[in-house]
Image 1 (tube, rainbow, N blue to C red):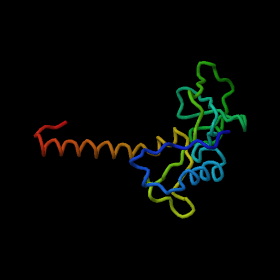
Image 2: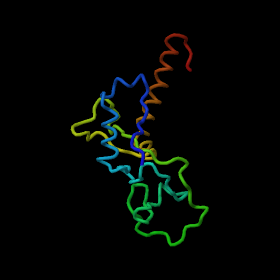
Image 3: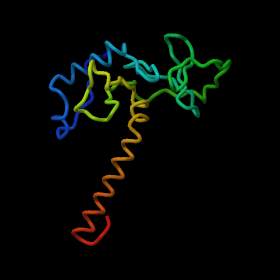
Image 4: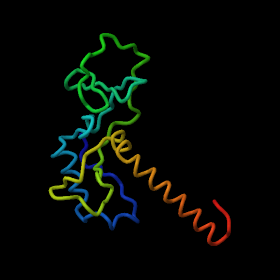
Length: 153
């Protein structure tokens, strides 16, 4: 299992993070979370088998059972799964350390504001913040366009 992979930080945002961010991220992802997503339990560095057409149902090799999108074993394991319903992730799952309040300047006491999340859970967690930022950027562009050109872009 590769543990030295870190999420790249854009140069313009680098100053928001503490100087020891790579070490903090490694501790959260591999010591605290044990190399698994803290929401759905997907393992770091492995391809995951998923059921097509479901809300994140995936096969956990370690317990030999299907888990739902929240990481809980299914109450009723399917007796038969056709091959055309199985999908393999294109890339291995790589955990990222997410700020739960979307503020990279605050990690909280004992890093309680941080969570090790797989890409799927990270995107689900960040979706409302992405929508808010998209609205704000569009609002700002329209305001600047109106102020300087009289146009809306």
